[in-house]
Structures are given as C-alpha cells and as structure tokens.
Length: 357
Ligand code: KG4
Ligand code: ZN
Image (cartoon, rainbow, N blue to C red):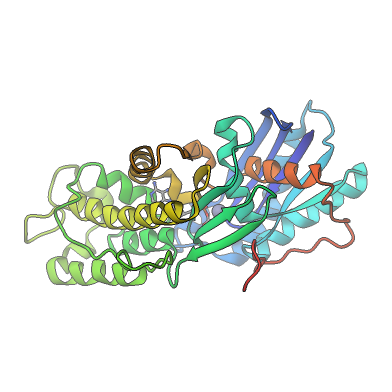
C-alpha cells in the first residue's frame, strides 16, 4: 500500500511517501523542512511562529515529495498530540488532498508514529507484544503494544520529560535550543563519574519517572561550583579545556555525568518493566533515542539481562520528528480500514494514545 505521511506537530514540516506491506517497507520519497534556526533565538519553539512557518513550507514540501511518484492509496496525518498551530496546518492539507484525490484519510497519533519509527530500520513490522520507551521533548512514557495493536501506558514522567530536562540544563550552560544533542556531544569527551547526580525514583518499584529534581540538582551544582562559568558561551569553549572552575570537573564531565544519570534511570525502569511484562520486543523511540549513550546502554542491558527479547532503536534520522514514521503508523490503521472522513477529522493537541484509567 502506498501511504502519504504528513507531520507538523512541532517544529518540523515533514512529508513522506512509503510503500508498505506486512513484509516490506520502502520509503519512496521524503522531505523535512526544519524550523530550528527560526526558533533558536527564542530558546524554544514559539507556537505562533511554528504555525506560520508550517503554512509557508508545507505545499512546496508536498510537491517535492510527490514529484514523479504514484498517487497514494491512503493519507496519514498527525492530528495530535502537539502544538495546535502546527497540527491545524497538516490536518487541513491532508483534508484537502483527500477530497481532491478521493483518497481515504487516516488520523495518526504522534506517539504511535514514534513507536513505529523503529520499523523503518527493521524494514517491516516488529514482533509484538512490545514494550516501548518513548523519550522526547514532550513525553517520557513506557507503553505496552499488544498483539492486537492496543496501547497501555504502564509508566510516565510525573514532571519534566527526559528531553525537556536535557534542554533546560543545556540552557543553563548557554547551549542553543535544542540542547540535548549538544549535551551528548560534550558528554562524549567527559567522565560520567566526575559528578554524582541523583537518579530520581530509581530504587522504587514504580515505573514512573521524575526528572525535575535532577534538573534542580544540576542547577545547584552549577550555582555552587560555577556561577561565573554559567555566563560563558559554551560554544566557544575548546574541547578538553575546563569550562567549569574552580574544581576538577570540566563542562564535558558535567555533561557526561548529567547524561549518565538520565540514561541510568531510563534504562533501569525499562529493564524493570520488561522483566515484569516479558515483551517479545523492546522499542526505544522519540527524539532522545538519538542519544548514543542511551541506545548503547539499553542494547547492552537487554542483551545481557533479557537475551530472548529483541531491542529496536530507530535510525537516528528517524528518532526526530518525521513523516515516514507517521506513514508507517498510518499503514496499520489503513490496513484495518480505520479511516476518518475528511469532513470529521480534527486536530487534537491533547490526544492520548491510550485510555486514561
Ligand atoms: O521527538 P522530538 O523530535 O520532538 C518531540 O516530540 O518532543 O524530540 C526532541 C527532543 C529534544 O528535547 C532534544 O533535545 C532531544 O529530543 N534530543 C536529544 C538528543 N537528540 C535530540 N537528547 C539527548 N541526546 C540527544 N542526542
Ligand atoms: Zn516527537
């Protein structure tokens, strides 16, 4: 089935055309117009600007992707959760194309897209039941995907998302938005044992997360040790030179220690949940899944502690928001005939993937 995917829930205007069956997956064409450069100067995504930029970028991106390609058999669009300003643009374009081409429409939950993003690297469906850790700027959740395709949330963050914690601490260091990738780049040159940050809720039996205390611990550490360093532009700090003084820790050590604390918690909770629910697959997805330390650590723990479970991580390109993952999630709904009439589809910024009990 040829599926057109449209994603505009945050700051990426993304369109992709895929050809998928139950045994294969090919990306025919894809294009993403990023708005990061525009939002950088505000230190985060500005919803009103995002909406205007999506409206400006989306039709040229659609045209480029469809150039010389067959007409899709289904259109999959992210209709939530996310920024209403962005969702409205994607949903309106999908509605219009559905009406013009007389092609059915599928409404896709953004988180379902992230979960399915691993199938792009796997070249097709993965084995269920699956335990999915979604770690992004807006979400940190452990979700079970059943054989029937139903989702159940078994744990989630009680405050900040993991990506949000990365971004907020990165801001303290003077890194531009989004700071997660920059922290992990600096971390690669530092010692994860240099500073001991707390591992919030690590020793409790719950599989919920909490990252705001860790963020505060990082802030206090900087205040105690580096009040003047906080004013430095970290981009100008040469690699290997101490940006944090006085004291022995470098900015690289700080980043490595902070990253290690987040990774330890995410991995420990995922392994704990997997031992309880015994899934066939473990899926790591969401923007934070681009973090090499997290990918490697989770894969090592699964191989060591759960040898009969397969761990799937997305190709780093598909860790971030993209339309190919939305098209893949749309394929499953289209296959079941779960279409939404173009007259009734609506953007829902608070759409929950699973029932709230
Ligand atoms: O999934 P995503 O593209 O957008 C949301 O739906 O939120 O995730 C973006 C988040 C940001 O918080 C960004 O800092 C984080 O993913 N991120 C990373 C890395 N790459 C992206 N965090 C840590 N290490 C990375 N390498
Ligand atoms: Zn996302």
